[in-house]
Image 1 (tube, rainbow, N blue to C red):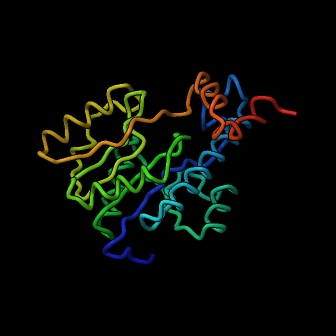
Image 2: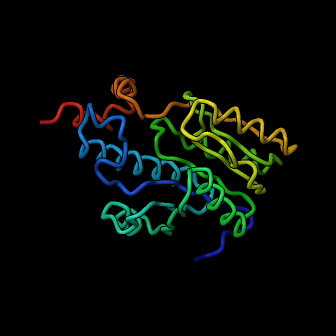
Image 3: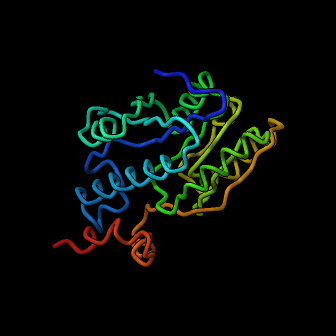
Amino acid sequence: MAMATEDRAIVQVFAKAPQPGEVKTRLIPVLGADAAAELHCRLVRHTLSTVAIARVGSIEIWTTPPADSAFIQLCKRLLGLPLLLQPEGDVGERMSFALRDGLARSPQVLLVGTDVPTIDHEDLRAARRALQDGADAVLGPAEDGGYWLIGLRRHDPSLFDGIAWSTGQVLERTRERLRALGWQWHELAPRWDLDRPEDLQRTAADPRLASLIADLMHPA
């Protein structure tokens, strides 16, 4: 794998393999398993496109088994991106591993999820600037109490230990860890995840995003 240059970050996109029934599970009662998986694919494409436009660094896809899924392999072929496999463990252990791996190859790493349809290339640029300006970490808060982006200039596994993931306390617990470590951090504007049935209506009401779900909500 090519080494990142000194003045560029690594951007790690965490993207689950789009297995029907295993992604966007809270939307399956509304969309069905296949349409929920298709929405997941669209959000991955949307995120990768936004990250590419931002041009803040080298992009990597960190996926889950089966890494040979047709969609993930298509992303790899079309975009020419490195494909890496997330390790076993909870989401904190997997993020910690990926960030540590990235920081061994680049001075700054940004890790982003694929559930936020309103992600903007300026978000990525602002995160990169914060790390360049000396912040130890940067967070992209989510309205549900988690975060959709984390960026680091340094790594400490305690940042991720013992947090109750997928709860509304993730962001605040992470802030507490950052304070305990004595790190300086920057926070981006809060954004919302497309995870729940009510989020579908929010997406449909936004002219910029409606095309993500229009045919899934009203199939021909």
